Length: 504
Image 1: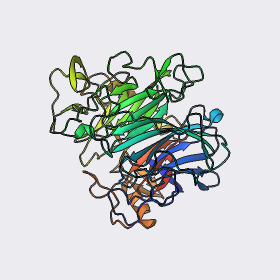
Image 2: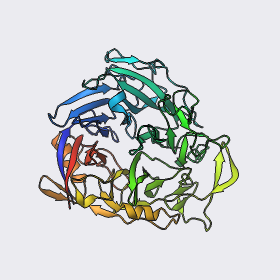
Image 3: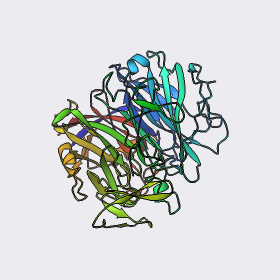
Image 4: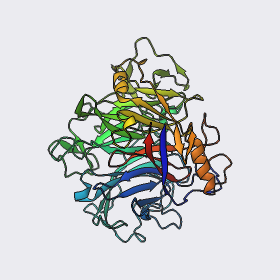
């Protein structure tokens, strides 16, 4: 059991009437970051447009940036796609490892190519925003086969006044990526937590990129997660600051970032050199954890949302193929999206371009998976190996959630590493977590979100959203870590931030 306590209530930016699949969620908070340097400030990104600063000491909440410039709104981007829900809008925010010195952070947002307006930010309501040596010239989009109605954009921001509560500084576009659909865009960006100045991993960014919905299609775009000439359905590894690692990383095609020379497919003709791993449907959340037997060695972990049957947690290895859209979890995914047993000898042909090659690889399998069944859920959320000090009962455990059902589990990280053995049948055991909130006990997070949603004026009789298992409601609960490794839980449904304050 974990005990949680309310910390912050975000302003309502969704539709309080609950209409729309997820539009009725009160505040679509999707990222929480603790500002480096023990400042006591949390940066909170609402996918509907605003990025807030929350002062943990004074409880003050201010708008730091606003991305929503649609129609007559005062934000930055005319083409921000946010109202369709899913992962649209401002999806990610991440601090640079050297933020206290350089003021740099990164965001990901989604745009519709069909919307009117400019790709450049509108600064009329953000007078502190100026442009650096590149100006703000939109980059040439990295192409993806198939129709392209949407794009994910990675932007680098440099704040020149870290004491202020509104942004002052420069912005430049780092990467623009074409998407086949409104689901599964560019996801979380992370840096190696143990890398220091001068190390090979210093300021090297890993990005989880969804498949844009391509992998479930019955059309020619279905192989996109497998194709090594695309960036969708992949884990990328880049150096976003072109001034870093100049001797060991080459410039990318658009000249806005570098690609490390030791990336997995740098030497493979026709392959995108940015790729670190591939064959993933929606690896929307990434985290790092030290090896229990060697603290100098860290493992990259990705949670990937499944299609038909399985939600997965994956230990990410250089060059590995995680099987999608030909595998889901530890099973075969057939062209009609029905699962079947794996073949006796499980291999997948390497594909570059439209045609497959003669080369084959053995796919990598999940360390954890759970099903779309009443005891499981619809969509895996975020997860972390707990390494804080306030909750000793959770030390060494990987804690994770299901978005729709609001179920939480933990697995021993040692069991996860043991499950990463190449055997599709080896999986780490999962253990259910229950909740205590306001002196009441709950089996899942769902009733907590529902009570708060309705107390804040939400009109949907259940909850906004839907899922195969959850039905016409969705808890939409995720985890975050602060700078000390302590856990927070946040939910788009009720627009609340909570902290885990006890565990047994």
